[in-house]
Length: 441
Ligand code: XUL
Ligand code: CO
Image 1 (spheres, rainbow, N blue to C red):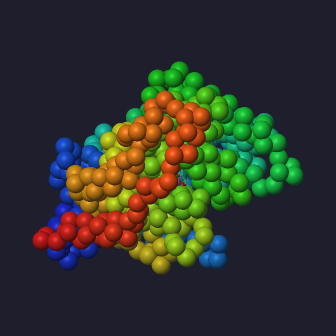
Image 2: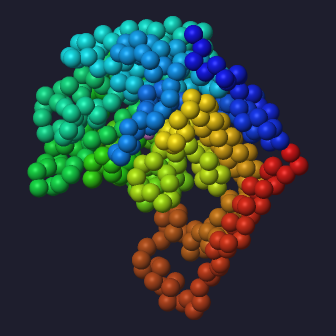
Image 3: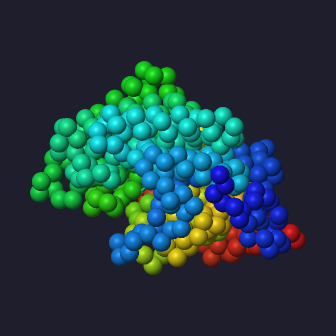
């Protein structure tokens, strides 16, 4: 059965193409430096937003028209797998990602849910045999069901903790079975609403315990995926324990998990934390903790997680700058944790949205690569911090000084060598790179 009848394989046609179902910039085979675009960008489709999302919002029911709508239960789950692999092939995308509940319906009991998962995982494995599309990461949804009302690893109920742990165990087994490159933990309800009824220390200790148990079990079954923690400051809980990369890193270090985990950084989560996306990527990169990316964007006028497809070129340039400076994403990738708008309800919109996101990141890659080749920001930064490469600055960074010596030095200072930060000039230069990368094409 064909689900997307009106869509053929999406090809690269270049910037002058008027065919909306074509890539304008993303050319998988094109080399940027040593590697191809496909190898660097490692795009992934998020199963939940693309195959299970109905586009409902708090004020209205779903609007999505999907060719698999007529099915229910396990038949629906199977139809979605079939549609997903047709979509992956037509989009020529190398990866996909899912939560357990995205691929198979939950049963009345854990045993029943696991049996449903076994059936669908076997089907996915069959499809993967003939497909180039691999599993970037999987995870389990330990936040939607009412049992997780008070959290999962951080739940006030030990039985809920046990249930969450059992779901993680199954998730790890599924990851191993399908050869996932990473395994993600987003702490959906791992946070709290009020301190008036919360034992914060116990909750955080318990999340640490759950992560260690997961690592032990992954080792036991020989699942060597990179573990990823995905920070988000709020929504659904008021205070999420993994607020941003900095607090997530402190958490990992405190619980001795920093060598086991890296970060899966989502653009819209950075916005919610009051950071830029590049701040979060940079913070992770300089600590060697950048693992993977949930590529989306928030809306500047809305204060919640709108999960839009990424189309803002300025942001994709700065994101790709961080990713290239990181030497790529290793086993990670760019997963479109993004959904089409409620008004974009047609099946073809799913293709248009992914094409927009892929082209925006491909543009970001090309522009960031040129910025790095020309050492644009590196030169500015080297010049700005030049005082640390000689004299007193050199002594500071090499640890060869103390407060006595610095006081003696400061007493002799009569003027300071501050220079302009040149921010407007730098932004104009970046605009120049954005525009000139595509002029003449
Ligand atoms: C929620 C979110 C999740 C995670 C996976 O904001 O980003 O979809 O990416 O659980
Ligand atoms: Co995400």
